[in-house]
Image (cartoon, rainbow, N blue to C red; front, side):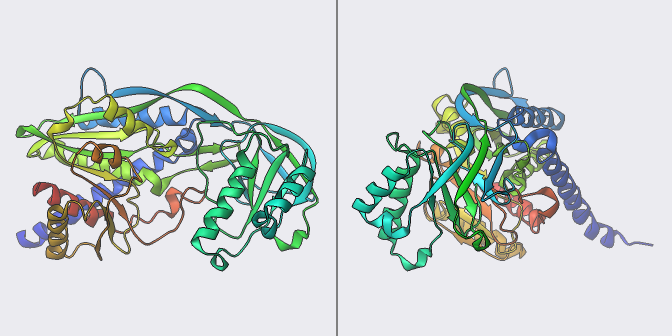
Length: 423
């Protein structure tokens, strides 16, 4: 027969397993094929926002104003159709063998190539000659060892490559960039003059002599995106705690390649929703606002719109915590703005050490790399926290729910609830 003491020991573990199970449910839903990578093909982002709104309602959050939804508009370039790319007659697999520049226009046909060496990129006269010879052809830029160049040289090379990709007066049909590095995709709100493909270098091809492509883009001038906002009234209403996470991701690159975004940032939404459930059951000290932002991957668009059109008094925000990448934690967490708000950072470290939760809590200065930034620029005290270690999948087709370990999710959750008590 179990003693009362043993039962009390088990209860916290049962509580945490419920949080982990709910996190899994949220991440599985947000990364499902139905939501199409939470991008702008098949309205994946809107489906994700609807799911989060329904979760807010189930949990018991109240809308801020008349609705949980705050709409905003953005332009967006998408690739909803099948995508084909062949090099020297070999068909490549989208997402696995190559990515397309997200601003690329439609293109169809077979093209000859012109090789542009790294030396050509550094020689202005030779560069001009090669670009003239490349009219109507694909320019091929080989992979190179970046460690052989200084930071200034790398910057200059990147500037030249971007000129080749985007300058409207260059008459090449497109660009192929070979790389030994990981393929990392993104989104775009504009259309470039010609397409660019980044492909994994394969020395078995030999010299790339021909390229066959078939890509169709669809550009939206005014796509309706949205933030999802809810709140729980606290014991005190004179100040606000704001908890945020972006729900959007990169969506589909053609019909075949989906970018699920499990760690980035279905995991952050899972943390946000778990905290919402916690505070619905445990009345917070201060009124707490929960915001799931859209458009983060396009340049922090949702948080920028919210700050420009606030539904709460920004001056009343006592502290804001932004969760973006919450699915690992093998090596602890990184706290952006920790050096700025040192008192709060020291409280976070003290709690972590007291309860022996995470391997480390690393400090970092300010960085405008997630949705906290727009609030911080308006004087709102804020942290952006992300987990460290574990899987390296990011902005690629491998950031999947089934391989996301959630290694320290439970301890991370406990650290956050204990920390928020001190604010």
